[in-house]
Structure formats: structure tokens, C-alpha cells
Image (tube, rainbow, N blue to C red; front, side, top):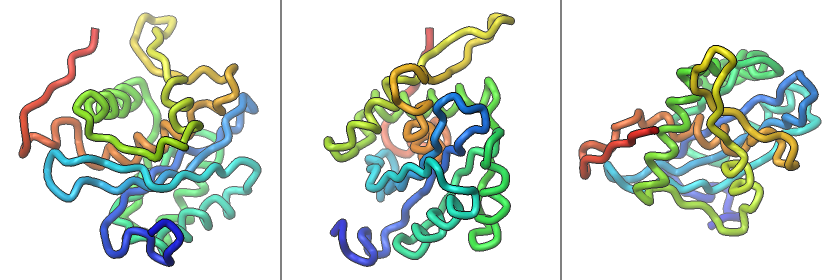
Length: 193
């Protein structure tokens, strides 16, 4: 019931917010609503995405607050790295004290990407096929090496995908199920080469 006042009824959802950066490199920011599986090892479903480009941080927090009225929100993961993220988090935690701030580091990015890869490989993530921007955002996430030789992930900003904001927001939602958190179902592992 996408146009109902509560599209998912009372079913819990998880929200991810990728902050728009202050670098001016095409980073627009996004909020994504994901329905977690009802049973261990079940499928996640991205049910709503919203870009927050051009909005001040107060308005971005308001978008998240509006989602808390429409959905039964259990988790909000917020990117607080640079840009408006920390300011949005400070406002969101007033109306949703359980919001979790995430600072993007080499390790945290790797964990987010590996979790998403785990879901995709297991066929545990669903989205509306009309969400072309969401698919483009995930296709823009690339594994690279830092100058020191460490593996990290970044997004190709040159292809008009706005830094993969929808992908990172989705990952900030689904990480509420830790890597390996589906072990109550069938065993599964991810090996990266």
C-alpha cells in the first residue's frame, strides 16, 4: 500500500541516511527506508528512497522525522562523516534517541560493503525495478587502494550518480543486521580477493 498513511502498516523498518558532503564533489545525500526480514535469513526490501540535495541540515532531519510518522522505525543509521551528517544526527537523536552515528573509515566502509555483498549474493535484497538511480548508485561503488596500500571503497562521482548516496544510505540501514547475523538460517560467508 505505497500511498497509505502507513505503507507498511506496523511492520518495522530501518532507515539509512547518507549525508551530503561539503566538498562540492557531486555528493547530494539521501534517505532510504528498508524493510528488514520477518524471519532470520529472510529478504530485505528497499521500499522508499529520497534524495535530500539542496536541503539545509534542518530540512534533511525533518525528512527523516516524517519517515518516523509514516513507518514503524526501529533503526536509523546516520553518516556523520563531514558535510551535514553530524548536525542532522544531533537533531534526529532528539526525536529518535536510538539513532546510530556512523563515521566512515576504511574499516567501516569495508564492513558496510561486505554486508551488502553478502545480502546480494544470497538473494536477500529486493527493490522496485523502477529504482534505476538506486541500481546506478550501487554500480558506482568501487574497490580501490589508498596511497598506503589499504583496500577501501569509494564512489565514481563522474558518472552523474551523486557519490552513490542511495547505495551508502541503503548500507547504513541494512548494517543493523551484523555481518553473519543471518546465521540462524543457513550458513553463508563472504570471501573478498
